[in-house]
Image (cartoon, rainbow, N blue to C red; front, top):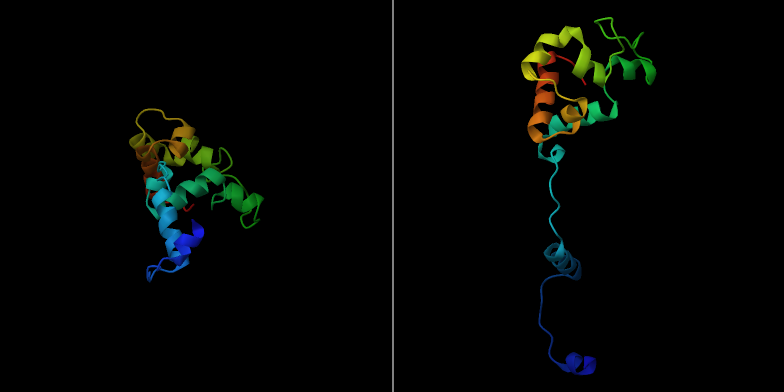
Length: 132
């Protein structure tokens, strides 16, 4: 069969082998479902990523890893300035926190919840004036 096929006149196809492979792969690729994080804008993704990983500009990271601030303490003086403190406990941002989250919401939901929850978190960070 292969010999018979080889004897037939071949089509003149202007598509390169690499391009044809790409086309075939794209036809068989199943679309990946988008999670909440990937539905955010790029700046919002950066904020959420930094809060999730702890690689941010909060005092705990700047003091512990980089030694660029003298203390890991928050300006409120109650605890180290980390993601959990800023999103749950810091008295400096209590009014804003209650405005954005009138009902108590878990830290996990603020960082890993649906799109609306993640957008509230990025809005809170933006309005608080914190640089993460």
